[in-house]
Amino acid sequence: MKLITAIIKPFKMDDVREALSEIGVAGVTATEVKGFGRQKGHTELYRGAEYVVDFLPKVKLEIAVAEDVLEIAINAIVKAANTGKIGDGKIFVTSLEQVIRIRTGETGEDAI
Image 1 (cartoon, rainbow, N blue to C red):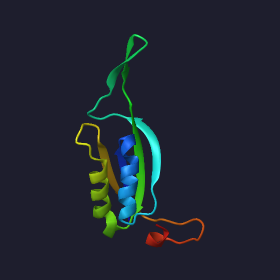
Image 2 (cartoon, rainbow, N blue to C red):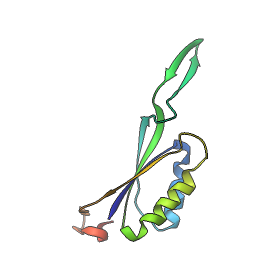
Image 3 (cartoon, rainbow, N blue to C red):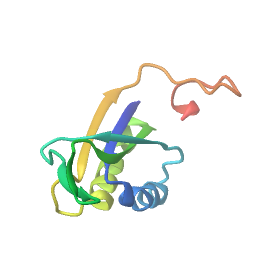
């Protein structure tokens, strides 16, 4: 089992969710986050004063998947989240040692 953590632009969240639903991924956790990478923020004007926005709004998606679905899920996220512009985001994949569904006590891939 693997945990996919994807940091994407907020307006792409619905596209990614739909793409994951189409391939049969049932559960996604979304968190609004702020951060920066190569994009490094930007300058904005507010009531005549310039200020720097260092941390840009992003959405962090966490998706637990079986290993046989991993590449399909990654490809779906990349395709749905891609705008071709800087700041599209990143995908991190980590191993999951154990998953337990609290309601039923199911473990492993059955709990996903």
